[in-house]
Image (cartoon, rainbow, N blue to C red; front, side, top):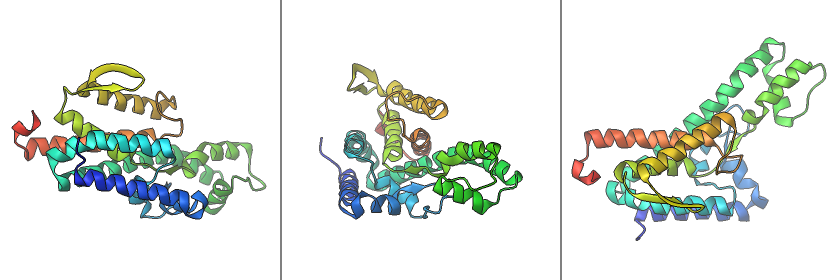
Length: 248
């Protein structure tokens, strides 16, 4: 399959960013600059909302993502054209950010407010979360609350997975009867079942913490957010802009 221009350029950008991650600053500088941190964390910067989409955490991470981008992105770009494909891709990435950060805030805010009500100041809470060291005079109740919100406060996110999940959702809408197979489960499954099934498993993993296929540190809600954004965009375009013959 010939690689369309936009998919090719996205793959090149991701590879360049990955090489930069390995070559500059002992592997840490790019993460500090370009990974997406929780907005309450001092490491957060606005540009990370976009830059994290082109970052990856390891060779297998970028390999699988770029393979999926080529496999699903090529037919989607050929059907939509370059401009709409870019809009879909970035919008899915933003949908991933919105849902994942919303999920983190859902975990963070109730306990953070409880810590404020217990007498701690905002500065002392963030100091303890940033250093993972408890200051004197903190009760066991407050320590428990701090432990509960520590993962959300210190979370960072990298990867194109949210964007690609949006592209996969678009592919399933355009090619519902295309047969797909997992490497470890060589049974053909139609896209209209396969891709929603993956999204449902990601949703279950995000809620329960139980990993099915992905590493335990996967931002599952980002996958779901990207897929939902992709679905909504394609649903709108299909309803309002495209000739039905292009969807057969």
